[in-house]
Length: 407
Image (tube, rainbow, N blue to C red; front, side):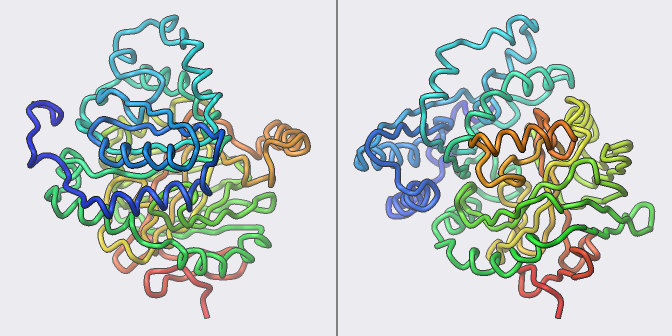
């Protein structure tokens, strides 16, 4: 029986009202800088996340803004423009027939809150690669609208996802709520120490160990054109990373990615990628090979790299498979297959000068464009596959769960 059928009180996360209020306060006041009168705030999530959505809705009203609550179906991964039924049964013409009112709804919002957390993650599994690729292509314009405005993602605990992580609902809920109600200010302080190195650096070198092949792999990329971004709860909450987008043309070599992540409800782990001339020319996964294939074969940009980042949150005492959490674990490194972040190349992507600069960098292949952006994570803590990270000649190491410049 799917997780959303026959649910009872034991299947529902129990969260104290004071924690919901604090969580909502961080999302609205810290992440979105306090939407004011005239703002239209989209609050999107499944019905299973309603307790948090309702608090957010009330607080938005109290701030003088207008909430736009978008409840999404349980067979829709993250509320994409179409559900899995459309992916399975619709023709290409049907998938292309996106309602104009839906586009207008996204265009008219000024702020965006997405609450992850599924009643039944399996409801959107099983799409053939070409079906998943068409779904992602249909959703791309909506992604572009969302990321052009103030936005934040958070994760609500559900019974199905607790089971996926191999945890009881009570312990999973406790972990999520504790992480989502902590002041993110200390993260900013740790990340600011690395910002100058990212800002002035030219070449990144990542060394990982492939346990199956018994050899070390080296991946190189250029960040000369790149701007570092610090993450302390402004886009993801909870948070903790410093990231940038490299010159997509420059990526060369190999990397082994050992930590499990879930994508489309499918677990992927033990990923090996080999790049030549900025493109993935060889890929494999010990678990989730078909899902990895679906991702890499989506479009030309899905064979290129869109992000390089370091996880900076020392407070995560468990490594979850959900990408929102695993990529933030202090002492991890993640890269993203697919689209670059525009604000990693120009300060203001929406300005005329910024658009012209981005157009030039995109034409040159430095900025990568794709319907995909999938984070995959390597562990540089003891026992992980990660070995060394350098920016130019400066080595970065993990100390007390945080990346620091080697003494």
